[in-house]
Length: 124
Image (cartoon, rainbow, N blue to C red; front, side, top):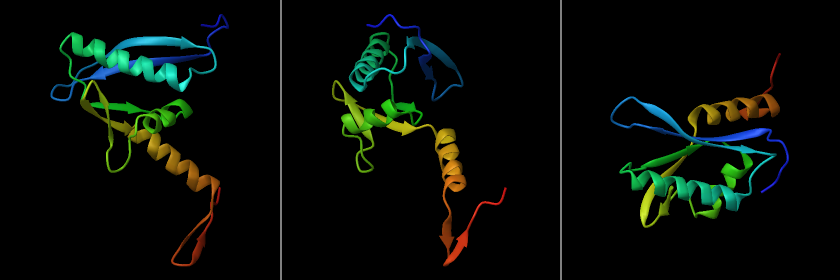
């Protein structure tokens, strides 16, 4: 626990798969960032609490923040096994598609690349 002013927030939201609804369920005010261990504990605790009220979590979606990159690594998520387990239940881990598209776009602006031996450069 620190007593520094918060400059970030971590928000958890659930969304229906069969019906179109979504609801923010918790938020954490953070100074700088939380450790990967703290994030791991928050995620697992949140999933367990949802289970306690009969909400089944099938997938967990995050952006590509540094702690969110650490989470799948710490929980053995891989392309072959794209899930982590909470109390022996599998939960698929997914990076947020809009953030993936934004990252891809940013890479095109940052780097040149070749297609069929022809250099492609950004022209702004």
